[in-house]
Length: 252
Image (cartoon, rainbow, N blue to C red; front, side, top):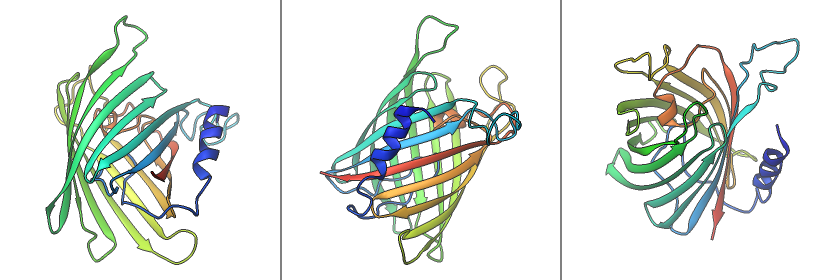
């Protein structure tokens, strides 16, 4: 882990006992917002580029294969409305998005989002850029513990529709970590295209712990990419990559 990331992680840990717990989320899927007006969230998502079985004699769980790091900030100026600038270092990608969440029925919430993205590809001169449109649904916990999620998105650059499915099995508890959840995600690729999609569907699984104002997740998946738009394009192999997320709630 490089020094800038270490500094960011340290800053995210500061104040862990100051702010309250917040929304239900997934590992990569964007879910309807649970933020109150005036709140924000600092997001750090980190994926090691070396698979966990990469050169086992010289690496530790792929940690020496480099990393793909996503740093974002979500801000809610009014209830249900969010703005989200972000930077992903892997392909020098920056995004600027907005979304609106509402309760679809008494059993589910939904969110519509639109995001402008621009990223660098070394072999071409111009940056690739366009818009990503997404619609997400999240059900109320079944039996109080099982939370399903679905995201449908359209990538304007690739001109493709994709989807992601997720489920979280979570339990409230006493102690430092107020909520523990096991999370799984799956991204089926429709109308596979050798030039635009990978030969394998993406998947990820992990555990998340929630405390006052912080969410910590440790995960493995078959891609070092981050976010629904990337993962719905598939993976090259089924090698496993290690990653983690840290989210911190900020109250203005």
